[in-house]
Length: 221
Image (cartoon, rainbow, N blue to C red; front, side, top):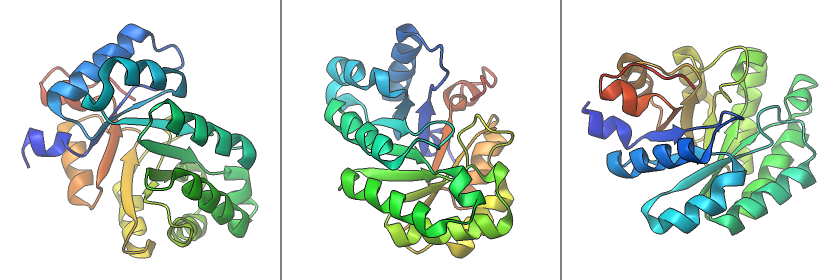
């Protein structure tokens, strides 16, 4: 797989809480130059990116991030504001406490509500696999599928662990045919990128892809 092919599957990411506008500009310029799938950025930067770069760039942002325990109405307003500001894709975090309490129907309904708000825009659902049992991961595969979301995503990158090939394979077994997989957290080498793509991921969330494919070393997510 060529570097160019891999970069088409990358959500070029900068979600550090201290990210400056200079950091975001660098991210966007790299995304345009290397034609990544999107930039994944904090909601506060969406409007500014859209104003400067317009249709040159696909903006992805995060909702309920990184802990997931905001109430649904707050997440819903985050989605609406992000889309108004110019986001094209939304990565939401499920209520992990609800998952741990096995309130799967409640989680599914929240995902469905946010997907309805997204309409034709892509919704990716972060389930934070490092905190879940296999049973809970399988339940989330079903919830994401039933709710009509576009992607299931492994991790925020801020939990106690990131993506694993084993989790990607588990997703592939239990998600519906219309759901794709995004891996994030800990994807820091060319070998990581290639392995996750070969395992069936359609997207990779990482801040490192451009630097590692240029031979500059990983920067972390």
